[in-house]
Length: 220
Image 1 (tube, one colour):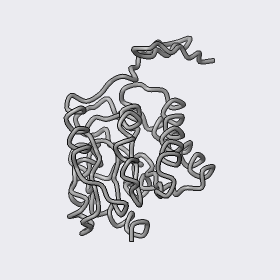
Image 2 (cartoon, helix red, strand yellow):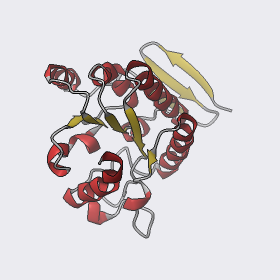
Image 3 (cartoon, one colour):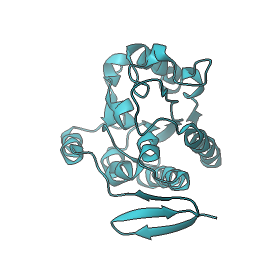
């Protein structure tokens, strides 16, 4: 049985076979600068927020959706602990909706699945408390494709599946939508379809078009 040991500056997971170190304090190098920028932008209660990591960050949501009120709050490399740290910047504006995709970098950095799922609950509870009228939407994690140059995110399909299953249960418990984008991006080998990615992890233009099409019924 796994035993969890939490340390202030980081965390370690021990099992009978392996020992893996993980760090809840990791933040991307431009994290502070990006958050400062976000804080400097005006807020509107009509805002539609897209919150997450590079997969959220790497498109212009207002142009993709032709929606001026769409606001990009993605930071490349971010993890669920980073989202929690900067969540007040989102909730202070009392946005109409927030769409969340976070967790694949947690998996790549060996943060345990159970901790990721617990952080999802913390994100939901924070938004509900700090901005009760904001509608919350979670996206499932996308698949990956390990036929590209290897990344720490690859060969962890079981973790992605476990987190997605847990996320669906959490969303059901909180009565919020869980948008299953994962399955829409699969190829016949159960990998991220090459038609929608340029590196096996991030989306290309066609990938963003597909994601936007899936999201539109929840946005408009």
